[in-house]
Image (spheres, rainbow, N blue to C red):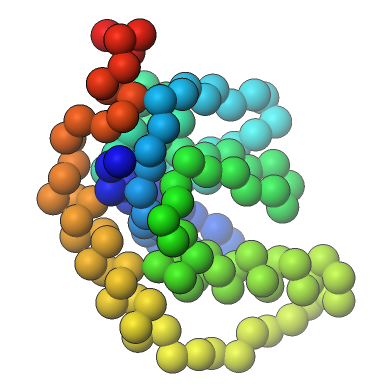
Length: 130
């Protein structure tokens, strides 16, 4: 398991860091219609080579990032909720909540990811990755 951090940019949020863990030994390469969820700041990402993580197609998001992604990234949680509501009801504005606890967890996870940057991940330990 590796701490990871991504740089994500969305029109609604601007540039944000998404944090979590990755624990995989696969390699993902995006097709022509998918875009990456974000640029890897720390961790392995989709395949350890192209510097990106996750995939987006329209309003579908996929990622190897887990442990707990939504509570540690309230901006991303809000983005998903807002897009779902807007798809159903049209333009909406979410009420602002106190995210100080969630942001403290986010900041701690980001710090760990940057401290562990470059350490061995599950994919690096596999025989076929050499």
